[in-house]
Length: 459
Image (tube, rainbow, N blue to C red; front, side):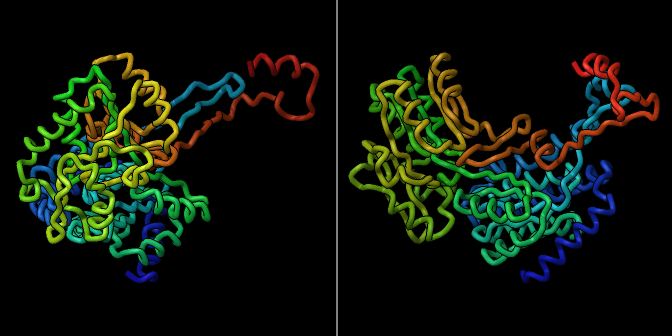
């Protein structure tokens, strides 16, 4: 899309936003209901697109993408009136006689830039929150998932007028052009490298941002863990979407005394969940493109592979792979893996694990498998991370009842449900002062009597 066309869309949305048309709650509700109906009608098209882009089965597509999007719309429709209402707060005596309140207000024209790994979910969920909050939206899906981007564009154009929500497709040129425009809020999901560029561009206009990035999310297993259950849930979370999940366990960090038994359980679970030949399992998925396929295969050290390691360059598939005897200096530990490779490292004590994790950049997620509640509380309190689970993986993001996001190197801000509505809203703090009485003590000339009375009002 040409720069003039992008500029036209942005200005068209800004003009419409300034008419106040998006402030109507009934209009927001109508838009969300229309979107929900369209998604239900186009579910087969969405799942076919996800199959073409990422090899996802229809079951996984619904479980991890369409179903969560529909759930977010349902949650927002149920609570939007409560989220949008003014909240009265106590008024200090010094401001008598008046009412103090906070008024949630939309930012205006919002840019949402979404990634390729969950291309439908991570484009539509923030869009739902932004529309519910009363904004207009320019949505930029990833060029790496073209089939899903095409379906998204079709759905948005069917449900919204361009002045309310529009999709801009394309690659780096379009991304750069969008970041040169004036937006009132930018929401970005993707890599840390691109996130830095987005933030730098936003800083030029002092535009507020939410960054949903990634990082090397640890999965800690202590000596008290139920190893069979831990292995089952780790294998699910790690190899879901062929490992291309921002909150997937990036590496396994386990107590040295249980490592060998845990590796055996992991091998059993990979075989049980994906079969003897995962490369022929049609429900397993594939790597997004050749570039990422080559990057992932270069991270695998054949001397350390204890399970998997096979690949099919034509189908862009890599087996679920376990790498044992790894350490923090290995190549596989120098970047977020974002693929079906699980390095296994060990520690001697939980305190050692906590110290080591805290020397690394803050991860988006952290998981702890333990039967000791004290250990769970200790690691969740002392380690910095975006969110996580105790005795499970990845499921913390699949709810509208809690915000999802990172901090530091894994991002800033959060969304989902109420937090999503608040992310795309500015709370105006307002004092509605009555015209009477008008106390004279705040005005000059100041008098000795007022000096004695003022502390009574302000303390």
